[in-house]
Image 1 (cartoon, protein in one colour):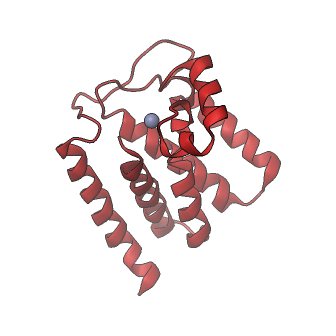
Image 2 (cartoon, helix red, strand yellow):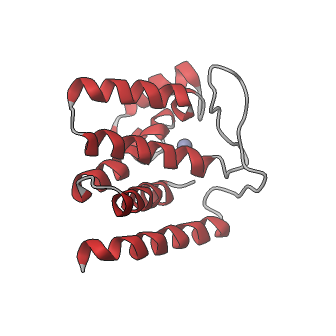
Length: 156
Ligand SMILES: [Zn+2]
């Protein structure tokens, strides 16, 4: 999936979360948007990879694309590291939800993800699509609709 779709996925997932919980909306949604692009640090051409080229190249050389940073292990590690810097649940939960939405969306692409890294198992949904293809535009549209539907209470 492209960065745009991931960011929308992170926003949609956290907007839905806000609807059903009492987390601070502004914080958790912003955290969700940030979290949604973190896994692609393994890819130097991604939004976050272009911001941190050195880290991105290092991660890519060490692990390759869509392996470690697209795994449950990485999710747990980031969650742990976040608790060292903040105890604001809205930020921690938001980033983790954004990251989880990223993994979910990448699991709908042909290459899938290595969810159980270091185990070399590829996870993907039975139906997949091409990154940047027309089906992804439909996904982006659906995520936008979900965001507006659940987000309207935040504005009105
Ligand atoms: Zn990815």
